[in-house]
Each structure stands twice: as C-alpha cells, then as structure tokens.
Length: 365
Image: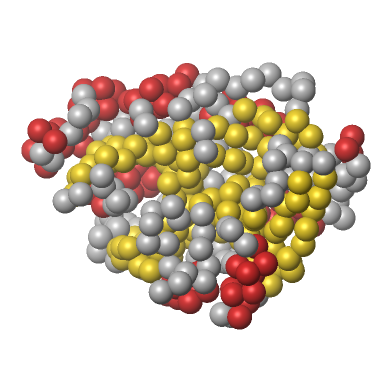
C-alpha cells in the first residue's frame, strides 16, 4: 500500500520560553548544543526572538515573545517553558496537510511558502493535544540555516557536544480518559500503529500509577508514547504535570546517544541533575539480566545512576533528568539502544519510585 503521509523524521522541537537567549545559553552549556541561527528584531522580526540549536541530528528552537500582548508570552505565562511544536520532516507539506485534514485533523495553519536567497521552504501545521501543534516541513528545496528570516549566529560561544544524536521518542501527558482518543488520533490521522500498551499494573507503585500507549510510524523514526493518570492513593507524576502545565503537553523527550556513559558524565559536569537510583536496584540487575549479552560495566552504570533493561531483541541503557525548569513539567531521558525497541519496562518500578521521591521533596506527592 502507498503511504499517503510519509514522515521522514523529527524536523525540530520548538519551545515557547520566557527568555529565549537564556534558554539557548542553558541548552548550549548544559546539553552541548550549538547555537546556529537567530531571528529577531535585528532581522526585521518584530514580535519574537528565536534561537536555533543543533547537536548531531537534533534541532531545538527556543522562542520568546517580546510583549504581554504576544500569544507566545501568554502561552508561557500559563504553561511555563514547554514544547509548542513537535515538527515533522515530510517530502510534501501540502499533501501531508491535505491528507491530515481530510482524515479529521484540525488545521492550525494552511500550507505556506517562505523564500530567500537559500531557496524555498514549505510548511503547514495541524493541532494536537492541548495547545501543541505538529508542523509539516518540506526542506527539499531549502539550504538556509533554518528558515527564511533566520541568520547564522556570530556572537555565540560554540558548545561542547555531549554526544546526543537524535530524538528517540517524544512523550505526551493527557487527561484521564483521553489516552485512547489520542492514540486513535495518531492512528487515524497519521497512520501510526500501536507498538506497546502498558496498563496501571505494569506502571505503578504503592501510591501512584499511570497508563501508556506507544504509537509509532512502523519504522522507528517516530515514536510517540501517550500517558494518562490512573487511580492511586496519591497524586501521580502525570497529575502533577497537568496541574503545573495547566494542559496536556509534552512531558519528556528521549535523546539518543551512542555512548551514554560519556554523555551522562559530560552532562553531569555541566550541571544537569538526574534522578537517583538506590544500590538495591543494581544488586537485583546482577540476577535479573543476562550480562553475557550486555556490553557495559555494571559498577560504572551504578556510579552514574544509569538504568538497564533487556528484551528478546536486545538491551537498552537509560537515565532520566530532573525537571529542567522551576515548574515540575519538562524533563529528559538519555537513551542508548542495542537492538531493543522497548521503553525500559523492567525499570518502571525503579523509575516511578525515583520520581515519587522527587515529588515528595516538592510536597506534591
């Protein structure tokens, strides 16, 4: 069958933030991104400032509004810093938009063309969960730094790469009862299929629980886990996110690396804080996993707090940061895959307990 909506991968993640310059500085110094482009008043853009950051195959855009009337400023005031746009690279942005709307997607912006001396960029956008959007981007005829209106940066110190390579998956949190609706949205609109389903028995502790479905494009280029809260004795991490973000939205992004040990060492040295794991977790790993098939030093993983999981297809290494801003909303996962297409189901208990310890410190459990 012909894929009517082929997606080539993630094009960019655009954040709406309170101060784009400071956000760009943080991701450069802490995560190792290069600041490669800028658009703002100096270039004729009157209502916003945007910085483009790249590392490996990753592209982040930090955008801030310049006045209280700005919808960007209002978005940030309500939600805090967070992801506004999960943009997809496509071969035809007009056709992707047409197919999506025909299948029931709500339009955000009709297809439009931007041109400059570097070529032609075609984009369109549809609405998703909360106030999040998906922009379809066709870069096949554009060679500029990011988009018309953006110029290469000249006054930013180069960042020192931490080894991050690409977006592995983007996780969203939705309200109780809405997980199936949004899973159906990606199935019906994008043609995605379900890769995994985790119920509240698989992802729970004594106090809290969540449910999750993972939708993907069938190739692994795009993976979108969708979480909703489940009934528990106390407030779950999903409920805490929804309380502080004030809407469904992107909870965390998993960033892939080829060497998680060196990446985590570099990020720790840069000031990034990670969730902690008790020593008993690593004692259990000695017997739970088949270490003859895992090329990793357990003592080194324990020292850094890196989690390990294994399935029939291989294994993965993963670790989660604490929230990267004052509101306990957005955080990151660093992941290194060796065959496994899973999401660390064997680590759910340890991860949930680590998150609950963090919630308790904030008084939100």
